[in-house]
Image (cartoon, rainbow, N blue to C red; front, side, top):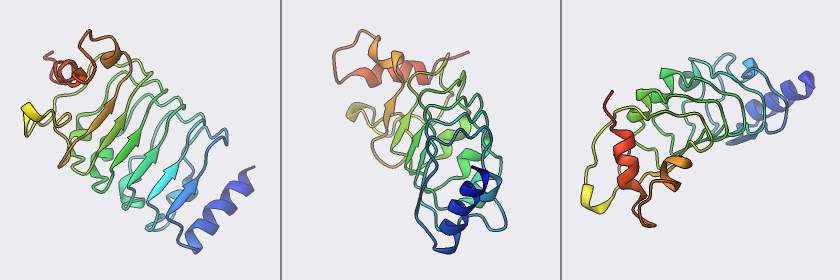
Length: 178
């Protein structure tokens, strides 16, 4: 299994793949092969769903600087490192079905982020972040240059608001004072 993983990553590095699928591999640790040397500079989409990851490396943004989409759902991730805020090209981040209790405020630095999936975690609240640029237009949670689609599960589905106005409830959750 380990040699197959190494081979998959080596081929992706040599052939400068933009997509890498590491789903369903029973990974307990983020593969060091992804982070060796210069990393995978060309990689834009990394799929690592349904593994057993508990953490992410601090140098993720340094080694995978061109990530646009990162799919990490259905793992056991407890903490997202502050370095996640350095993935400046990231547009889609799926952290649903993990063990997150908090989301680091550095996610607020992801200006390109359009889709953030956080459903089915143990989130108590979301961190403070940039305010809406255009509150009346409901432009998401203020991250990025346009609409950010949040998927936080119970925080939006049980808020009691009419369909299409969940972002008002999420805004209160997002900016909840301690």
